[in-house]
Image 1 (cartoon, rainbow, N blue to C red):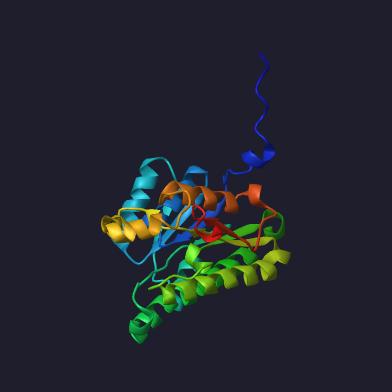
Image 2 (cartoon, helix red, strand yellow):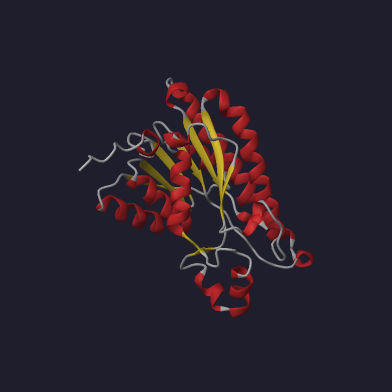
Length: 263
């Protein structure tokens, strides 16, 4: 019997041993799932969120499984707190810019309060986190050889429009633009910047929305594969983009949407 071939170099390059990552919005949902995935790939992960109890529970769960996770309480909408959080990290190889929010409502009913809240978190905070991450990465004397990776968690709504989501669509389109601009500017420093744009993901938080038959039918009717996304599918996309296997990929959006935006 012929011995199996060695693992292709490109696949072996998905490991993140010796890398340090920071994930915003890491207390639950996509952020927590991505953090766990990065730890499983060998990275040391800093978990950032506003809620200390969620972070400590998440970090303890990861540590009990043999991984390395450090909780960092930080409101990413506060510039001073963002600077302080990144100052605590000795070095940084990976940023997952995940913190975000959505307040679905008709365009004509959007209040200035809701407009400012979503823009502040989805755009301003993402900008500040990416800026702090880039500064930290550029401090490393071996940066050009080692490289760095930033992944902005966007949405399929950063590529299309949708009723009742005017502010969310606007902010995610902005995040896609920021991704491209940073990719071009940071490329000479070997820092890659990409986005992952999921469709509706099945989580405990989204489950109540899909208990409404009309909404569930509307969503599933727009996904050619006929089902919601799963957390591990988003984790796989993020893990690939930050790994050495994606060393020539920058300035792009990996759309994990079951075909929604292909129509």
